[in-house]
Image 1 (cartoon, one colour):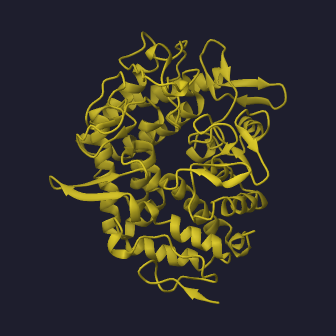
Image 2 (cartoon, one colour; image 1 turned 30 degrees about the vertical axis):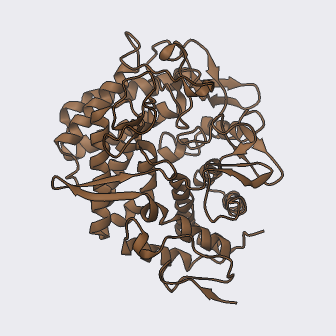
Image 3 (cartoon, one colour; image 1 turned 120 degrees about the vertical axis):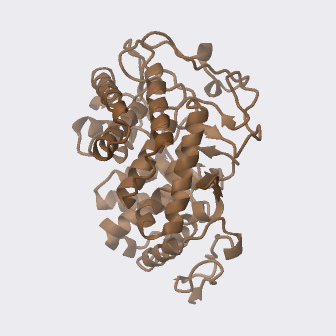
Length: 465
């Protein structure tokens, strides 16, 4: 039976061959933001997909950020965009950057989409200038979130966990927006002020002279939700930057979180290119280059260890004293996702050794069950696989069989919801966390988009079990 999805959900040209696959998109009048360019891209990719369930999941996931999470308006003559993470009514600098990733390449031909993304850039710069140590923000001084944490909370801040990637993702977003559209109007006085503050914050957290101005304590029974001594375990100031928390929002054990420091190097390369090409922020170039060099040299000297099975690999965390944490966490940036963020290419020998390590029983947060295998993390606990790790594995692979296997697992571990979740149990995909997690939906759609461009023949295969 051929069932065409109603036009109030998607374009009439999109159809599936099973009546049970009903679109999960909100009706047109209830969508938060509508882009005709995104809808055309949706049509284009769906037409290439043979597997009905994969088609259904892409229909649900690709526009999910626009459909459900975007709050766009004009403020003081400038676009302003607040992007919630999904089932938490707050904006993470990390999540919001990643959530619009798939729309960047379409922005050049869509003025409304371009203005929406510029609005997000504008809002992120405001957030950074308000508090560079915060990871999540409220839409105004609502005092929502973790206001009782022992740190310098503001009513506009939802959570104040210091995470390196919170400042790297906005640099990546503005760089990729510029490369996609050629629009250099975003490199204004506010941008320069925010970049200067980012550099200052990174330099403070190199902790060359002291621990810097940031401290944090949460009254909780969960050890990963707060910091030892309010500033974390001691580090030896070797050049890397301390990240008190991981991209999962869990506390680090050793403060030098290696994949996040790799993200700094990649981000400083991007910032340097912006400065050299546009001439904006010229007074920041020397600091940018110096930080990139110091962090990179410290990663190469202190972030690589000899593993008894895999040889030279990147550690997940180090302290500069010789202490290291050998593991990987599913959240990006992770060790698995290093090439995705551009620190090294996927064929880098140390990365390849690391890749084998993290996707093995030697990684304490690698789980293998009856329905899937993948990487999790302490945030959701033992035996909970994050689909994000499976997506990252595919996004950093050139092996078509490996990519196809990742896609098969993703299609069959959605708990029959049509969306990608934060985590699922290795033996039971119906046991999942976070039914509305826009970042994961975006990453899944990004994988399908990549496959449609590089390996379209994979979309002709069947994946549903």
